[in-house]
Length: 147
Length: 474
View 1: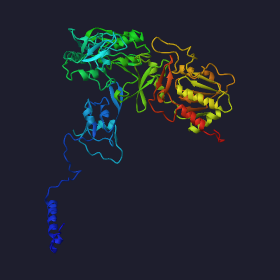
View 2: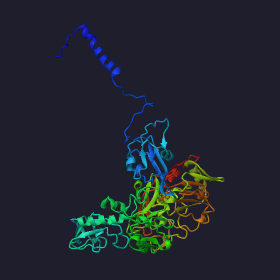
View 3: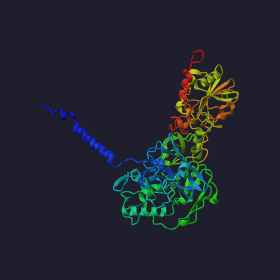
View 4: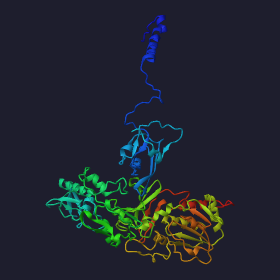
């Protein structure tokens, strides 16, 4: 049988305990270091291996990509769409290279699969938009990450 | 049956079988490049060399016949060492352009390099390069990728019957080319790309369209002529990318003609009619199924109707038309049509010495089995015709003068002569049976979805039968 211990009236008010708890709150609020930053002015440093916005690397103005289709093959989210074509200065090049950003899960497997060092993930992480974003080839070629 | 021992496994063989075939039947794969079961044996790639007990040196499995009690080792140290050396020699000059090459994914050199080669190259000299001449409309050549297996030369000599590919120069500088750099002449040029173990000879038609590993392969039969060659439709996302031959030693062996190989293109033509339509004075008008069937019924009502069946329909479709005829047009004559000049299987025959038949539709024999006579001219009293075909039977010019209704695959310019068109299915979009020129029944298999609003023939005939006209009578 559970016996209830009798407490005095002062103890029943829990005043001491409330003050003890408030002390901890005040200590953290006033003296502990802050974890948030003033975002647009202050920026956090991420690791070099951070996987952000995609870009296509170009060498001497010619895209490295040869449309070998290894990135759409390995992509678990199926967000990459490539159409291959031929032009005089390059046997095979991507006529169309699109990344559907809403589907992308930033796993970085495309970067890993690429035999030509063409598709890369940069450090840029500010990608939120109010519309459905599909990166086309022109955008991916022009945008360079800070890598 | 005599037996030999391969890798410790007992394998039965018929005398005269080579070790590659015997090993294959025992479930052992011997790597190879120049051997092809449909071509003569030259044993020049040296990849299939295996160790045989009591023989001092390695023997090429393609040119060695199995004998009673032979003990073969395909995975011994010596064999593996040879395979690795052969791969190193072949890859010394092979460009590293697998990302660009159309063959990658189904390339013998790639597979064997992965299985038997070393991942490290010791070669530091400059690789030899060639300038490539145009090889005609079918084949794109890239001589840098060639490993001199001479399968293409032997194919031309032995199967196509044209000595058009030759090997020039010797040793490292060997160049496989056409004589004087002429374009390929054979009608079987697509096979060069199939037998090439590397990406040296690839199809221009398939160039950069799709990587091989994305394709879904559907085994079916070619509808190009009455030979009934076995082939495989390779499609992705309901679009056909190419057709390749399927081995059938009794009909087409390993080959397929270009006509059959590229026949599928008409299915994806822009001007194919995939919606029900009726023709007006201003042109053809797309309408719904009900309207077009009503127009079709009105056209044929009260007329003397002849039913014309394309001999590219399957047996199942032809019998459903026969049932439909018994129900609605019991007195009408019925004919089959297909190729101009080929009325019955008596007119059919081989067109060349390889595969092609004169009848350019697949099921001529089946139509005759069902007792449908061939079309020569319309009987004089006929005033309207119901034309039912797949996509390949050629419309006979004799039917120009009468009112017509068409069911099946039609292009827009053909549609003008019909008062109503009910779009049907082509050979790649339906299942069914066809009988080839020797009466062999083979199955068509559906590879892609029906495009647009087109329906199968039995479905169209069912709507036709069940649809009530304006008086409420079926």
